[in-house]
Image (cartoon, rainbow, N blue to C red):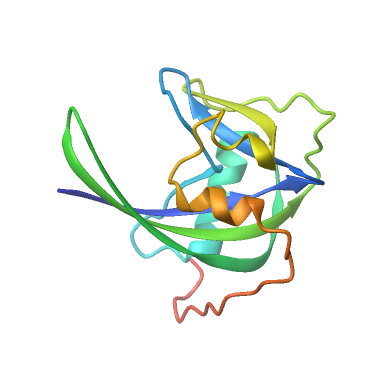
Length: 145
């Protein structure tokens, strides 16, 4: 089984939020990516957003962790996603351009999660909640690199 340690960003503009999609994929997901060995999660998220979108973000709060698993042509996968609420200068009126050839980005309304096949499924509950004041506990004893 292949294991993935991933950070994801909830980037909102009103009732819309930004999602990523692999060019050949059938589902969408929150922007972000893999945490490198020895890397702090918050630093990894800022790096991934800069690499994917060319945007600087400010990590505001930790929203929660999500465990997921799936099977594909490579076999079984397990993933832990750390999801953070971030602020950025990205707005829904802008055409968000991917900095990576294999990804596209778009804004979707929080009620369109099923239509755009947002995965993992637990993320759908998070983006559809109306209480944006929820704050989970998160701390790290890792040093910044």
